[in-house]
Length: 226
Ligand SMILES: [Zn+2]
Image (cartoon, rainbow, N blue to C red; front, top):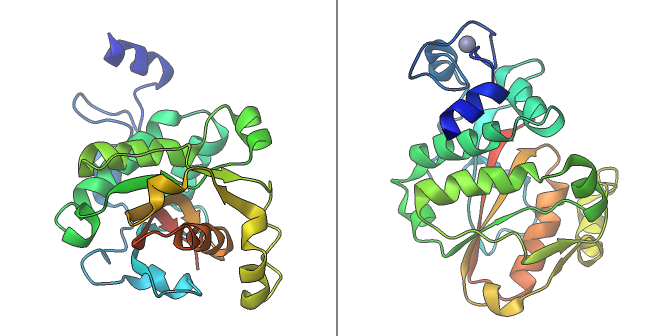
């Protein structure tokens, strides 16, 4: 029944190339799934995405699943996820990424997955946080609990991009707030985001988690834009 319900919302065409999909394929046709522009960076530590971070003392790993190119497949999928209501894409991306990385013990040893929260006003407009869906897909595959209520976003937009790295760092506590310290203290936490561009948002999020006493922090993002 769920399957029927999903096929009602999702016409049976590939979400990337629009070719009809056959039975057994989901969201993407086999070719598009095979051609996903993976970074293939998930076995080395800490991962290439780590160079987007200012404070790396407690950063255990930072991986992006896909390369984000203008008009590329990652952009198409994330656009449909964020702006066209295709929530199933978030779950699938999380599951696909999860199955790529589940042999990396630095990841599977983690205690808790936390999606980067949206500001409440954006959450209300969109109706869901795309990073929650990605986190849910990752959580299922990696068998690590996820929780969306630990970090609260106090500021709506990423106004930090024009500031220098040091300034961004100073402003951290104004953007995010940890609401349950005891959930983070001494834990290996994984932060999840959809796409990393400047990294300002994730840097801010990582700082509050570190300042809240996390043992280590890892970052998993669906795409990395350079
Ligand atoms: Zn396709």
